[in-house]
Image (cartoon, rainbow, N blue to C red; front, side, top):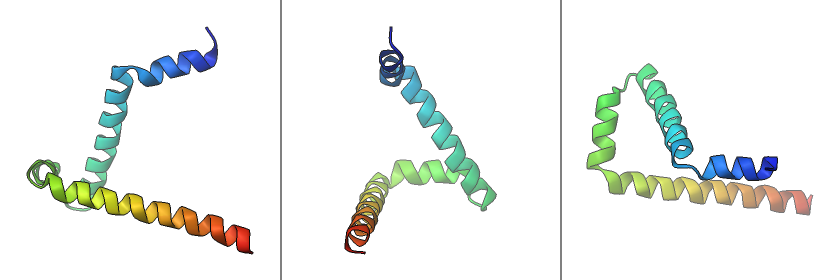
Length: 78
């Protein structure tokens, strides 16, 4: 089995996605906790206000895409 196939197999597995989600959530919750926001209240806010967080996610994606596009255009122009 080639390395590419092995990596693809690991990336497609359900436990790898779950582990990545758990690590990401742990990092975010610990960052919020160090800034004075309880992980319990963060989880409650995510569950109760799901629409707001999806909207914020879309806005963040749009801003990142715009920043990348502007970097590419500025590189081509200058």
